Amino acid sequence: MQMIAALAEAVVQEFSGMAAGGVGELGAAVSGRDAEPPWVRTAFVDVLGPSPAEVLRDLTDSAGEAVPAVVVPAFLASGYHVYQDVPREVAESGHPEVAVTPAMGPDPALARIMAMRLRAAGWRPGDAVVFAAAGSSDARARQDVRRAAGMLAEHLDVPVRIGYVATGAPRVPEVVAELRESGARRVFIASYLLAHGLFQQRLHEAGADGVAEPIGVHPAVVRLIADRYRAAARELMRANTFPVEVSGA
Image (cartoon, rainbow, N blue to C red; front, side):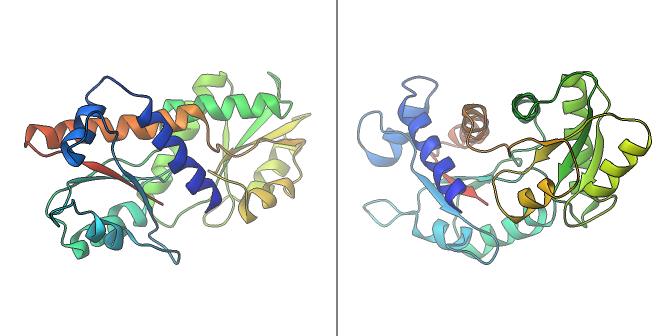
């Protein structure tokens, strides 16, 4: 939760620094003040709160009218939360003007961050790589993980094996062991997780020679969210509406 709050604050700063690209114009249209950046609100689709529906219901201007909004799902793959929870929350909010962007991942920007984290952990060309994802029972999310792993493999120019932390097979420790049995001298884990927590800790117990830090609050992640917002905002602008952003996690 702290990481999501820090990410939201970084997005606020990113928008505040944008004088061009229509972002200031959007904010000014919402607020009635010159060059104000979009509002940024954080919502959660799991046990935490507030929910997207609650946040969307509260997005009103000084006249009590609903402010058009963009929901950016802060997920690394599109599974049940993205395809079921987010649309349900939007519908339950009763908000009349909402655009939902694609999830954050997979994206080449995330692959570049993961490669940087791997190198910082001591990875060198020739070392084996395990792409560690949380896992999902949703086949669409698993396909996204395979796409993300392919992006990392292309960026590093080495084979990448996928392992899951919580849901799905093979699990990360199994993949590490298999790579060692196949002759890998050193094995490193690339963390396809957003933040530190239980799942990241499990990676340190998987028997690898090194574990990369999670993706975290990186400038490229902030720009990725801003880009998702801008693309959806342009669509709403074509309908003569002016959105604010809701980051869903």
